[in-house]
Amino acid sequence: MSGSPQIENVVVVVVDALRAGNLGCYGYEYDTSPRIDEFAGESLQFNNAYVPINNTDPSITAIHSGIHPTVSVLRQGGRVTKEEKQRAETLPRIPELLSDRAGYHSAWTGHVLGRWHRNGFDYFPSERPSHEKRILFKHNEQRERARAALNAISGRFADTVSDLYYRFEQTVGDLTDSVRANDQTETDEIEQLLAQLDVARSSDERFYGYTHLIETHSPYEADDELIEKYLAEHDYPNRPLEAIADPEPPECSPVANVPYAEDWYTERDYEVGVARWYARYDACVTEADTKIGRLIDGLRDRGALDETLVVVMSDHGESLEEHGLLFAHTGLHEPVVNIPLLIRVPGSAGRELSKLVQTIDIAPTVADVFGLSTDELGFHGQSLLPLLRDSHDEEWQDREALLLEEANSQRRRGLVTKDRKYIFAIEGSQHPDKVTCRYCGEPHWPLEELYHLDADPDERNDLSDRHPQEAQELRETAQSMAEAYSLPTQIDVSDVTYDDEEEVIERLEHLGYK
Image (cartoon, rainbow, N blue to C red):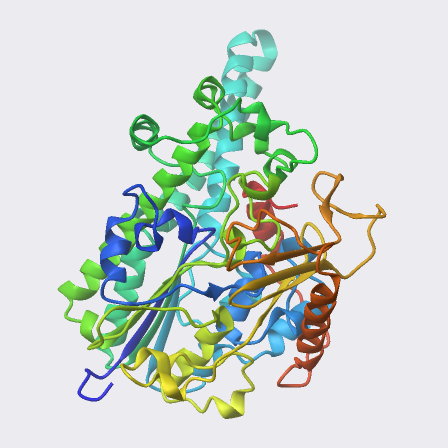
């Protein structure tokens, strides 16, 4: 990037469960993402970018560590094992690498994952306000019941109950004041991130910022007017909502088999049908798009855009109805693992690239930008900087294949090349020729799948029975890749506990995990 401005800052925006296929820059027919599309015109757009795994905990760990989940963290939420926590605590991650050096300020804003994800960040938001709000909600219900009971009380117990009720009201009032004093939702994740950039610049420090947008994760809570607008303007597939609220095998809807799911479906959803959930998702894309536009505007207004490398990506995609998976991110098919990845580099022109890249490449890229020695850190990914520099592609080592993992609803592994996809079960199943889903308990995933992506990009024709030799060769390649990965450091943590783990798991349950 000869003659390009000095990169002082890196900002990574992860939009949880964002599909590449629902963005205009990736070919979507509807105008859901005007600001992201504008950003893409100034960025390097990767058309073959993949996540190594399809759940948030392991995916974000891979983004910040550059280490493949195969040997680090595979599982999600409450299913993360003791050994995986030990690995997560031992891995050198970008925030921690920067915190060990003077002259850097780092911040996480947005959806809070807590636990090891907070390590190394100079600024990390508190979970307390949202937890207190849930308590307040329960207390408010109790207050209404208490009022009704008090009105029904008479006689000699009335004074005693009135006194107790007064004290209860006073306690709830104090708690309400506490929430208002500590509530971080008054400034959203974009304002918080920009404020932390201001802190770094005021101290003449370089800045690493990470923000996690949750809009496009189920249950797709968006503005009703925007949902109705898209429902009227767009021609979505439709059938009765019961298809996803209470699906019949072989279809699977993880969101129908988790706590709180019944609260996600509105009367209007049942009135319209599945089409309204498509509209809900698109409306969420637009709301996330608006936030990204505000971030870019904020950087530009501060004169910081041309000294900041900005990454917009997802931690995994989402299946809307593909492959019988209804509005969730189970499976290793393209809508779930082939993600949007856009990187804007100051001084470089926008262009599209078809090279195979994976999100384990983000950490070595950030390290490279900040001048850290990537060879000593043992990254499994490689720096994207050669691709980000105009006319320096020859410095990039092309890949022939990428390894994919799945360990939440079932344990499967995959391999993807530019024209092939192979997926297979690597642990026993309760059914002789199917993989049993942990969410619905039904055997509906084949033990192996083979797709020729060049002729079948939508993965409609499983060729594993017709090409067994090819399937076997791809399986052996995947297993060899998995065996070749190792941790860059020895595990040196004997035991790991997190004060916030219970709350994090509760929050994940509200998002549809179990």
